[in-house]
Image (cartoon, rainbow, N blue to C red; front, side, top):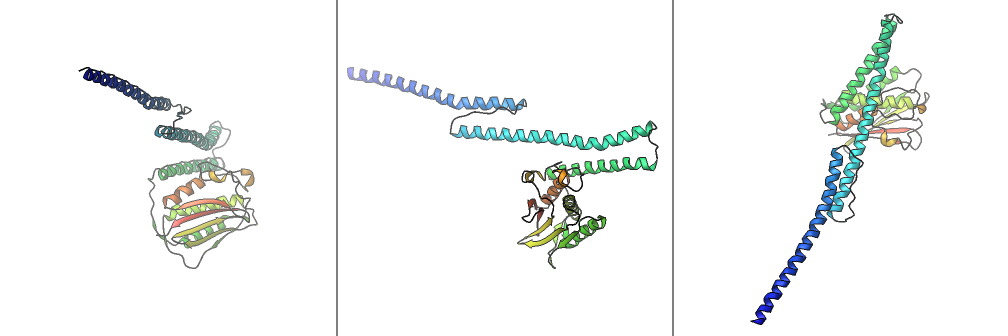
Length: 304
């Protein structure tokens, strides 16, 4: 009997100790789980209030630690996106304000009798309205392309004919500037393209090349086929592109150092538009510097 009583007491004491240890371990485990969750909850509340400077500090090397690192990377991406949005909004406001200010100033001068309402006075105002309309159209098309809603009218296109037509138009408009030459094999496969969009891409690239190329030097457009891709290059012999500018060339409203150009102007949307149009065709566009000097813009388009 004493043995059974002793065994019962031992079992009760052992069970009590085991239960206490289990309870203590449960509390510790729950604390370890809830603590990072509370930190993540507070960080989420900061983000909801618009505070993107808050970060989650989790020293653990387990799943919670990796979750904290991912959360911080997400905040960093949100912060960069917010900065880019604010910059883009400021740039759009600036680009729209310039022609509107010119139009408003000229019209006020006409109303006040400073300028006479003749053709010479009204013509510049009309040109500014055209510039404003083009800028608005470009912004609309960029928004459609980025949202995947841009409609393309693709048809099998002779790329050499298209390039020659654009180049002939550009050369005809030049007065004493650099000439544009085309180099291509005799036979090229037809490529499914929206001809209007691709003409605009090529015209933008040539316009960019002309601004950076001295008058006595030629610009070349090269076309070739590589595997199942059509390769189109626009090569100039200008000063090239600074390495720190290369990652930003295709951003909206980005302009390089205008001191290196033959002429200034443009809204800074040309290369951004070119990138969106090429990518809408399933292709890629990139820029690089040539070893012999100058810049090279390369377009890759799928043939099939």
